[in-house]
Length: 154
Image 1: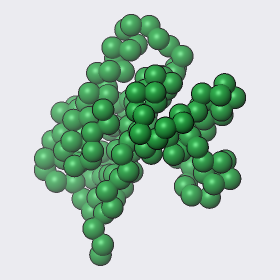
Image 2: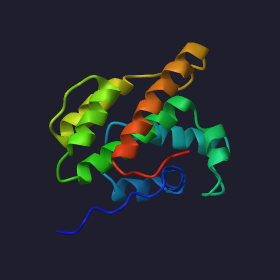
Image 3: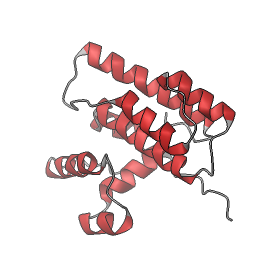
Image 4: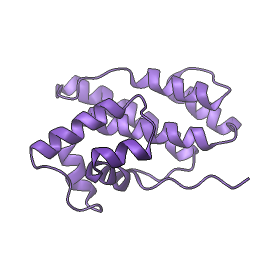
């Protein structure tokens, strides 16, 4: 078979998503866990006139998108990469264990463990303890990204 395609850079993916019309978005992807949240956030940005205008301007993207949403989008890109892998290597299983504390043997098991790590967050919660917890989760996700051979998001 063909080797897995390299995913698009994180910021570019999210900026492109924010620019797509609802019709385009529905025809190009299957709805998943974060779809409803991402769609609602896109509509909010659109209504406030705050959509990112420059695909390469990750700083503006980070300033406009709450941390909880950025971490969830990072998780979604990791889940997509996991779906494309034929199987997990020992190093990849170890990275998921290091991040989540869960032993996994399959790609789906790894994705589910990472979803449990993320949990559920209110994107409007800007308390310091919430931001610290989200940053810790994001750090763990970035370590998994690295072992999966994915491009860094920052």
